[in-house]
Image (tube, rainbow, N blue to C red; front, side):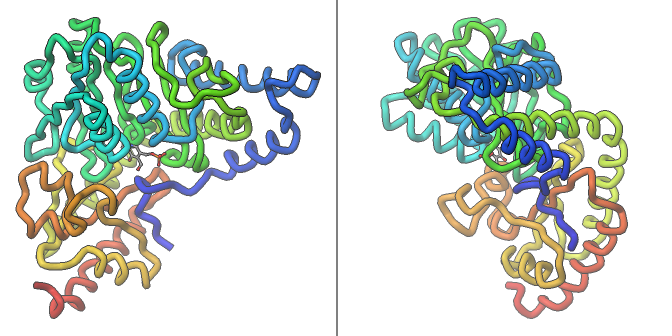
Length: 379
Ligand SMILES: Cc1ncc(COP(=O)(O)O)c(C=O)c1O
């Protein structure tokens, strides 16, 4: 098997699975229970929060454990909107956000919020100037992703953070689900108030994630109940999930430190290989994240290629089904200004630190073979 769909999800690391099993077996008590077992469980929860905070260089009371990226994004965006609507009802985001942000913002429009969806250039990057110009007196939130999930384009988060700092009345949320462990992003003095991360994209488990929420930032909770997680996310804590997430976070940070150069080399090898193939056009810009390469084969339905490669044990993907109104078309590639021949034939390869040059070589050979085979069905 050659697995090249790591932006959809990653294979859990064996150590992550081990820690989940160990904690589930030994520390199964409810951290809210006042008996000894509950107390021990609570201690471990606090410890895992401290470790997450240390790895991210933030404070432990700034970590909210969640079930993943979708939940983190919704807690952040709706939490800010509902809590601070008295001050204003304007939100700024981009046209290329993940549906958990994009549709979240659309849902707020039905509640009377006004949302500005900023365009991107052909490289899939928003203009800092546009962000600054879009700010109004009633703007309460800017929500912009770090790394785009379909294209791999990197947004100028540091610069937008500086703008946000100059406007202390608004909050700045960053969806860092795809950037985590691949493209460094400091939460320290960068103007970021909220930052979403997800476990299953970094060899952690599905149903795990965390939201960084800067001290003093108030959110309206989406769930009411037992007041866990600083009253922001009520519900019995998934301790085994939290511990396993911290393990995944530690492991991916180590790999980011030691294997970034190798991953970048692999990415370049893949890019150069794709560019040499007749009928392939690369959509991902050169200065993008090292793990995502998006390309189109105009005239070919992406599903056909995915199934042809899948039969040979090679797994890649297309844009997520929920990311465009027109089911055939990528909303993200469209936002970059490409025409339908490209937006309707986009494919994504997404790497992990585990992929090898040998795998990429095989993939490139197989894609050439597949194009030759499928020539007759190309429009
Ligand atoms: C950029 C981005 N944000 C959010 C999410 C949602 O994360 P989760 O699957 O953990 O809910 C994804 C998942 O693909 C993503 O790529």
